[in-house]
Length: 181
Ligand code: FES
Ligand code: FES
Image: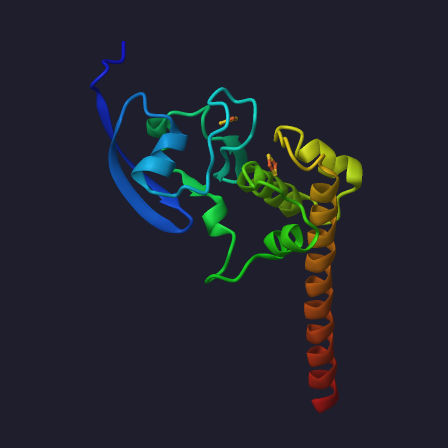
């Protein structure tokens, strides 16, 4: 049986940074992320695995962080919404949510962004049905989901555009190198 005052020393990598802490045996991961590490972007909506507001990516998998105890995450690589931007620069997905009005109050948004990030890593060009399936674990009381879907579609297009541009640039370099030989 777990004693109420039992603690565990854990180490995680969160958004690329190593963090060590001693945590209560029964502390939920979402509370560790928010209260111990101070990363308040991960929200709590229900504490029972229903709303998706607490979604993070752990070792490449989408996880509701209220459904895991902090000691269970020992040794894990965790990504939260704070890790999506790069040096203060919004990611294409975050920009798309801003431009396509994919949020209103924003409470669900961190969890939706993590679910969409997980989707786009596995499927760069999802259909509307695939997007809706990917965010079905995330409850939003404001948007009606339409603009969220548009935002994720726009992010997929933007990312595909930058991949195309990079591929074209590399093709030009290859061509020039061939000509020079
Ligand atoms: S707070 Fe975790 S699913 Fe709602
Ligand atoms: S934007 Fe308000 S809950 Fe989704």
